[in-house]
Length: 107
Length: 114
Image 1 (tube, one colour):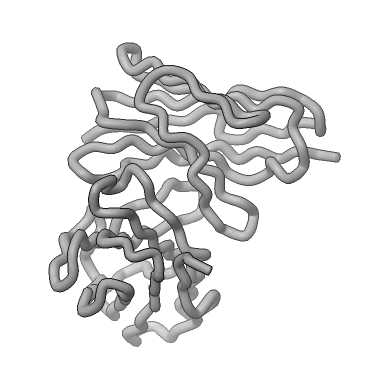
Image 2 (cartoon, rainbow over the protein chains, first blue to last red; image 1 turned 60 degrees about the horizontal axis):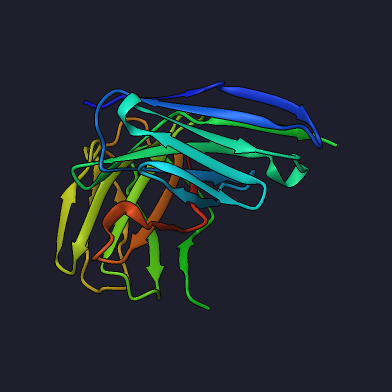
């Protein structure tokens, strides 16, 4: 089946720093999404981005479907950005999830 | 307020007991999903339902059962056949015309088997 790999697995930054999270996938997919899971477990959909670039405030995402990767950019990090960031790809009406990048923003 | 509720938030059970996790949504979504999350891993699909009285197995359905008698409700039973049930369980729903593209998640239930 399709493989979804995220890097880095862990990232620790100071408040105000910028970061880039990567998601590689092994086969063509119908779409790709980025999620944020806060320290209490709540999952929030950040981007639905099968291709191209989208921006939402300090966050932006780019998916290059032909090269099978997506990038999530976080600028001017805040402590509230801490948590785990997941990418998930859709195949046959199911979401296949990566293992996530755990981000810790220190004040 | 519209949303998804899961109860209880924390659940402890003795080995060999069945336990049922509740998931209710008032978003009028047709599709509902159950995921399992283990530490340091992504979510894995247990079961999903696209319409009332119908559901399909996901990747890790063994040891679990579900029902979908009402549009709003999709309870998950963790049976004694599930070998390693300690995990974080997440329920989600989505509109029928979007499928898994637009999933809204509940707050989760953390199950611990003693």
